[in-house]
Image (cartoon, rainbow, N blue to C red; front, side):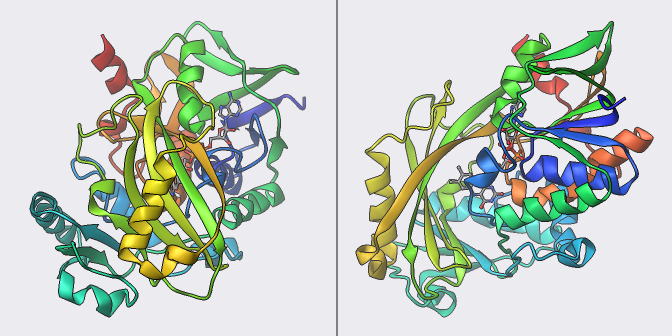
Amino acid sequence: MNNIFDAIVVGAGFVGASVAYHLCTAGVKTALFDRGLCAAAASGANFGNIQIMGMELEKSVEMVTLAAKKFDTLEQELDYSVGLRRIGGLLLIQDEERWHSLEKRLRVIRSAGIQAEMLQADRLREIEPLIAPAGLLGGFYHAREGQVDPFRFIWGHLQRARQRGLKEFYNEEVIGFKVKGEQVEGIQTAKGITYAETVVLCTGARTRLLAKMLGRDWGLSHILGQAMVTEPVPPVLHNYIASASFFKRTGENAEKGKVVTNFSFSQSPYGHLLLGEAMYEADHFRKDVPYASLPEVCESAARYFPSFRKLRVLRSWSTPVAHTADNCPLLGPVAGLCGLILATAFQSTVIIAPLIGEAVMQLVTSGKCGFNIAGFSPERGQAREH
Ligand SMILES: Cc1cc2nc3c(=O)[nH]c(=O)nc-3n(C[C@H](O)[C@H](O)[C@H](O)COP(=O)(O)OP(=O)(O)OC[C@H]3O[C@@H](n4cnc5c(N)ncnc54)[C@H](O)[C@@H]3O)c2cc1C
């Protein structure tokens, strides 16, 4: 039967591509569904940075540090270039309060073996020569972050998964589930029902809509993140740059409907400058960008990198990104819905994606995961709601 699989993965972004690859590599007969094409949502609209410094610190340190190591062998394992470049990450610090909170962060991430450091403003030009440090106290720096080409990352995983039997169903939206008692038996699209022992939701921001179909509420919200891209220029940035306020402390979330303008800049391998990011918590999935926010992002870029002032912006976009109140993902099985696994709402998805594919594969094949995911249980959101 061509509508019966061992596992169905819904969502062909960073997470779904990695999950599909690991399942197929383990010999699991897998189908991948997406309502669009691969990289149709946030994974086709992001900068590809492998961010370690901004990780959530209460529950995610083990997972993120394990994940970071996977990039050392990823291209070799896939036998495919994902465009990996070992650039640094530099968070610019504008005020004393943020300096002190980052000192605390530094202690935690150093104890996990990550060699980040705090730099006074007069040292910023050593690592980012074109920066104008006026108004900055300094930076939080990690020399070995990195960047991938998001499309190559996803294509590479899908290509290898396809060679190992993956069946792909694009432009097929999941509009319902086949549930018998407490067992999820499959998914429904406009073309009918497809059955599997396990359904894995890697559906990013839209997971909250799928939750409703199952009568659940996993406490998900979503942020519309906005960015733009300039014409290509010769290499001008050595690092991924962001304002230190970009990575929020738990509970410090964007106010619904209110645009928060942080900045994050990086240069793609093709020379384009990626300039972000304004964001707001939205209850819709429209992709219109509020006009006022982009000039503010440009203003930050020009303030700290005056030579960017003359660059031409080619286009801008916005995309919904899944978010939870505690900045922790929804990862693992769902109580009362056997056969359903969630893998979504990672704070920095790129760094975590290779590990999550492996973790979900372990859950599917053995019912266990190689690292502690108790704190990421989808049920914690539901408990909070009630
Ligand atoms: C401007 C910007 C820059 C960013 N830069 C970075 C960065 O440098 N590094 C980083 O780590 N993160 C970055 N992010 C965040 C990152 O893009 C997301 O966290 C990440 O892409 C989420 O990946 P995902 O696979 O979980 O979800 P998505 O990429 O959103 O994939 C979900 C998929 O599920 C599909 N889907 C949803 N519902 C259904 C359905 N009902 N039926 C079938 N298919 C469905 C969607 O079509 C989509 O393809 C950035 C975000 C923005 C906005």
